[in-house]
Length: 177
Image 1 (cartoon, one colour):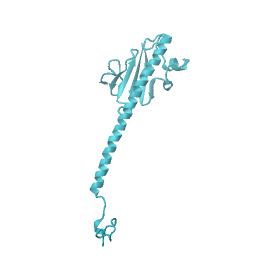
Image 2 (cartoon, one colour):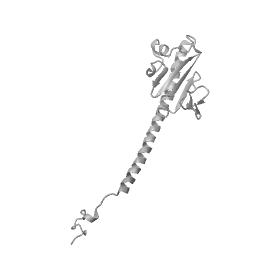
Image 3 (tube, rainbow, N blue to C red):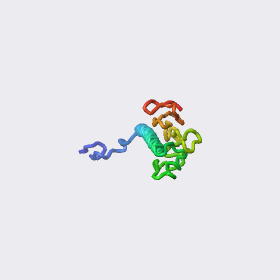
Image 4 (cartoon, rainbow, N blue to C red):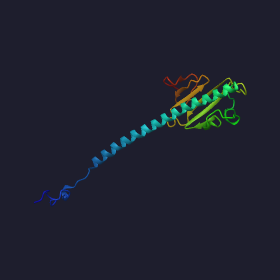
């Protein structure tokens, strides 16, 4: 007595007319769903990378502003030459080691930083400064530009920048630059 017709009684053997498999439409449906999930995951990863990069820049701007203020408290003026005043001629260094380079178009972690002593051309009595950072590749390494000066308020704007003193502080929505 055969339990499974056409199989000789074996439940896993089917005759040629009863093959088991997936149709082309079923396979394409599964591949489509997997592609949609992959696209969502990649976009989420890129967005988190951008957020992390911008958070790092904000922390760097605060750290650099603190280094410049520490220099000012000791020397009664802001540095006129970033590298010489904060690193080469300083003992100990005022700034973070990662920034021991020329701050004119110095790139670190996907952002380009620029330190400018004010008034322009000051050699020993710089009374102000600006520090700005712009994304090296807009949309990939960052979507906002940042700015800080002696007020200690970090300002930001969306776009290639640079941001300046007229842009919104961090607690407000960014303007377009």
